[in-house]
Image (cartoon, rainbow, N blue to C red; front, side):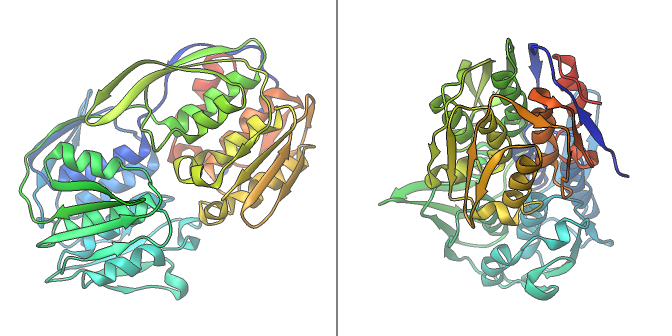
Length: 437
């Protein structure tokens, strides 16, 4: 069902709020709890469509999952204890859930079928399929490795050593999840560090995992077929979701907000580093740690931002945040140059093109190449146009933020997919002073 949104100029934003649980950690918490023996308890789980699809896929493979008033309880089946699903594993819009679950299924000796929505079935899966085949799994896919696809799990999986050709936390995690039910040691080598939520949570659960530096590369080695017990997991707020509120506070005059209990994993805060380099009044308060993850309260105040160059090396730590960074850039003095963005072309949409098109129709000066984006900031943003989201939740939310500082209202052609990652987004924004309907 299509759900258009209209975002209008806002007064100052203020208040203390929380954002939904981190999506990356939520997926991993469910999956790893399913591999423990006994009942794990998860609080703060992101109850978005993407995460619910992962939970339903696990249930189809014999994992009992119960939601109570305060927590989610997962009765783990242990490593290798999943059973063959008797229905298709429908993953909606979730590329993360799909790739991680493909990894988990690749070393179970049964066949599973994956499908998704119109956006997901266009997204590339070969980068995950290639290493998973090395375990002994087989795949039947559409041309170019697209969904719908079948995973024929290896009955006698063999451990592998694999160097990631492209920095990807999803592919790394798929390999590590396949390694859980594989005898011996599996090693993943990454030249460029990516999100390490899988490693941190695997260590927290008690799996035999070792991370070490080797020259400039990072090597992650997991010894498979370990039996581990249940855990209590507290999922912190999602820094990618917090980013929309943070940028809104930075660009709407007079604003000041605090977002409580946000994950500040060092591999996830590239956006916040970039904003601080642009002059953002941004602080991490009350820093602490839970289940291996760093957590803090984020304070953001209205700031006069200045354009800068964002290096390509930072892209893995902020790949999902370029849409909202582009909105900050639109209000900065001078040019903001973002490099190393080729990965944006294979997200929920061709995000690089979607960002450029949206800014252009809103009256901004923008230039995009195959792997870079340059935005020239302006004090006055005309707005007044309709933004095509291409079924991408981050494009929808980013341009809803742009509407808060535009001369004329900005219309989002469809905001229905926002629920895949940030349920309650509109209500939360309006609660601190936004004007979205």
